[in-house]
Length: 445
Image (cartoon, rainbow, N blue to C red; front, side):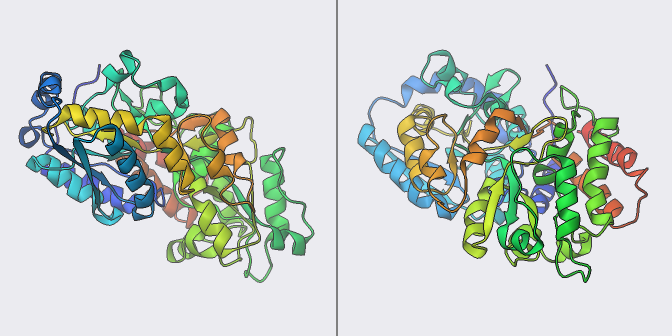
C-alpha cells in the first residue's frame, strides 16, 4: 500500500494550474488538485462516515448539493433529480453548475475550507489525489452488499475509480476514441474511406494522398495530448505508457518510442498541421470542422459538434497497429467526506448508478451512459454517424493512466513533444527526453 501524500498550498495550486492547462476532455473531464489534510480533516472525516449513516436517514427533510460543470447536461440531471425525489420525498437535491474553468479551483478551495458540494463529479486524474487525501468517501459497502452491480460497467472504466482496492465512484458515462474523416475530401482525392481493417500503413498512405502540395489541406492531424493521440498508438504497438503501479514511465521502451515517433512523423513530414498552427487553431474545435483536415483521431464527445459543423463527417475505428486499442474514460459521482448527510448522499449516488438514472442520461444524447446495454439511444442520436463504433471500442479499450502522483507527468511529456514536434529536439532523442520528463513528475509525487 502506497503512503498517502500530504501536499501544501503551493503543490495544490500547481496541480490546479496544470489541470486547467490540459483540458483533455471537451465537456468531459481533466484535472485534480492536491489537498491539505490539516484543513480537510483527512482520514478523520472518512472514519466518522459509517457512524453517521443511520443517524441522518430517519426520514427528516434533507437537502444535498450536487456539483457538476457541464450545463448542457443540466436537463438530464434535473430529470434524474425529479425521478429520485419520487423515490425519496424527504431528500431534496440542489444542482450546482460551476463552469469548467472554475470547477477545480472552487472544489479544492471548498474541500480545504470545509464547505463544498455533498456529491460531485470526479474524473480519473482527480480520483487518486482526492481519495488519498481522505476528501471523498469509499462506497465499497454498496458493492459488497449488492446495492450496486459493478459488473454492469466495463472493467477498464470502473478501475479508474478504485483506489487501494476500494471503490470510490461508480461511472456515470464514458468516452472512447475513433477516427473521424471528411467524406468530401476523400471523394475529391479519389481515396477509399477508412474501414475497421485499416492499419498504420493505410493511415499513412491515405494521409499522403490527401495532403495538398500548397499547404491548404492536410491528410491527417496528429493532435497534441495523449488521450486522443499517442496513448492509443502506444497500446496499439504493444507498448505501455506507465508501469503496472503507475510509478515509472515506459515511454523510453522501444514499442512506446516507435509510437511517439510515428505520431511526430506526420507533423515533421507536413502531413499534419504544425504544432504552431494547432496551438493557434485547435484541430478539433476549428481545423477539422473547417474542412481543411481529412482525418483526425477524436473522442465520442466530438461527434455532435463535428456532425453539425461538417455534414460530410464520418467515423471509423482507429487504425490497428499490432493490436486494436482505444483509450476509455468517464466521469463518476463521488461523496465529499465532510458532508453532514452521508446516508442521503449514499442514496443519491446509489440512484445515479441505477438503470433508471442511466436511461435518463442516454435519452438526452449528450454522453454515453456507462451501464452496459443502455447505449442504444445515444447511438441513434446522430443518424449520420455510426456511433456504435465508440461503443464497440469498449471491447478493446484501456483505462487512461491516473497515477497517484497526479497529472504533472503528462504535462511534462506534452511540453517535450511540443518542442520535439516543433523541430527543437531530434527524432532520436525525443523518447528519452519524454521518459525523463515523465519520471521527474512521477517520482516527485
